[in-house]
Image (cartoon, rainbow, N blue to C red; front, side, top):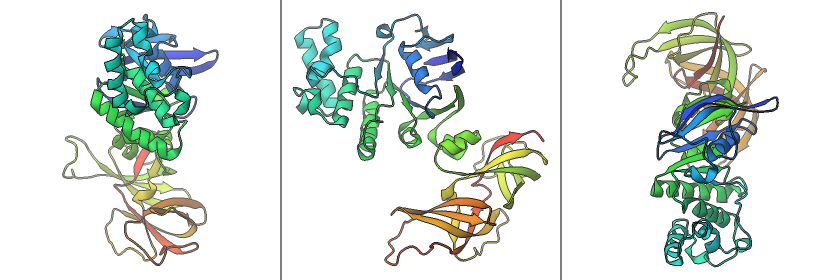
Length: 377
């Protein structure tokens, strides 16, 4: 599916601003962003429930915009399930087949095939009000898939479920995608959902697509300040470039890609080193990010003498214990608060070794930080 230069406004509000992207056949692709960013509007345009002001949407080389929703070979799973409460599970799934006037002998095996796919074959004769939220969502998925669409659109399908059920349904949804192999386009504001199941995803904000990539690319190499903040947790600082040095190629580095070691000055924190492939210059203003889990926290000063290690000393302002990890808010130079996440890989019967008000050292490699915004001096 190719979406090219699609724009949509509602009065003075710009919902989509010249959006273009290509979604590969059979891909699990997510549209990720906060409420009002345009992701649902884009999904509704693909489905045929909204018309764009400009642009094209093509499926297998054919522009689908002139077609009504029922002729686009695209089906939608809605956030509120949109099931018929007076019909059984079987009849909800069979509904579109009955509209096509298929015979009972054709309908029954197909319905049970898709009920088996979503693990509901034992609930065929129940009314939907007898089902749990997760079961209702499975009925909606089966009903959307039974017409064998080329693309399945999922509009925040798990947002009405509790956290544990949402995680379980997410795994099931990914397994269903692997079994049937059609294109899934998944809309969500939950970055953990998008990272968990997507082959690729697009980060959206205020009607624009800010970055498209794999979950690993988006998380490890965010393209903008917004992407860095929105995807997971991060520490983000404004900084000035002090010095830039070209590095020798590292083993495994992309062919032809030049890497630099930059020294940055962060107000009220000090100087840090970061590697980058961006051609930055002394005097430029940049944004620098470092993920909390990339930072090593210890009560003892690290013994390493590596020149690419950034080292700061601070005081634990707030430790938050979560069982499998502890998140520390560490105050450095009384002005900057740095978040650090420490995973608990080993059993401890004495409790955390770092507690409130401890003096600690924070360290990270220049390779673990990232420059996400470059401005002209």
